Image (tube, rainbow, N blue to C red; front, side):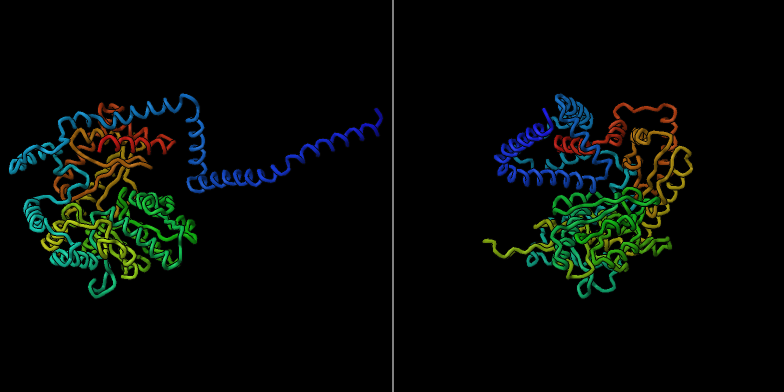
Length: 541
């Protein structure tokens, strides 16, 4: 075949192919944009996962998704996961045997009290050996409990939702808020000044309200409809809850080498959708105060909100400063702080279920309220997440604050700060351990480069101590309260003994939680850890 014939044959073949393809051209014109959009969405999803979770986490997530798709693997993983859940549950199922599932046919009347006492005796002996949990102790404990118990009982039937019926607890709430605001930088009385707030059921509700309020305030102020907030990894998990509840994108950024919020890292994450940044005074894990002044400058410069979590520090830091401790700025005296959460039921020594959320001014707080005008039940407005609220707890908080007064809080703060420093110094003298950062307040967190710190925790548990396990880095902490003032030497003695026990006999203690904490920390698939927690909670509550 000569060259001309070959070219002629090729041209004929090309014409035939073009003719056949032209039949599918309309379909191609329809499918091509769809295929392009599909590919673009895949690329965008991958980019989103990588940008939000980082390359390493995103890669692990994709690999684990592929592994789970292999036949039989998911079934095996679920089986192994259930084993861990069963171990976490421990003897929970057997403990639930005999629990009531229906009303008694005849009311028990006063016999109820004896049954309450019977069950109370089964609680852990928490006096002196619990991290946080109960904040009052000593000779004054019984008297203080009596005062707040009587206050709670006297107003147990009240509800501040009905402010026309129960003006007493409405007044108590306003005064608790005003007294708390005065401690935290308010220069005027709340009733006639700027700083304002409400009482809530606890730190989580205070944080939820502050986040919701910041979201709605920034929407009104800047028109932000796709809100984002930025928090250090040390910030409380209540912010994750708020992000889920209120559909806010959450960015967690690393802390610096001193375990304080990294201002530069936070600044890099700020964009047109940022509504809120967070600082803690101190952070729950390590008891370290974030650089609130620098965060305030950052918030002011970008016209966004700054919430300071003072749930732990609100009833310690103002008094520690008066006592001469080096406390950096942390409250409304810092320009840029728009809201604060502070628990009265911690170092305020109020009954459990009492916290305060504060705002710099009324223009911000108005966005906390929910007003309903079209309900057939009438006009409705509620300041907090709860509608009805227990007036007895409000009265109890007021009674606690009035009973102790400035003098009482100064005395308590002096004692717990001294106890905290004794424990910190004692831990630093144990060669196998190291203290995380430089604690600013009443939490001492420590880990080990030599031993499994969770095994040390199990050894301490066997001696009756109830400490808190942390991660990244693996560590444990004690939140020092008045319970510990007279047992610091006992704590350090038991800690030294536990370290030596683990050092001489490394390995998990039977029935201890070290293997579970260790496995969770090493598990690259965090979604699996999340599933474990959800499964555990689902079967225990």
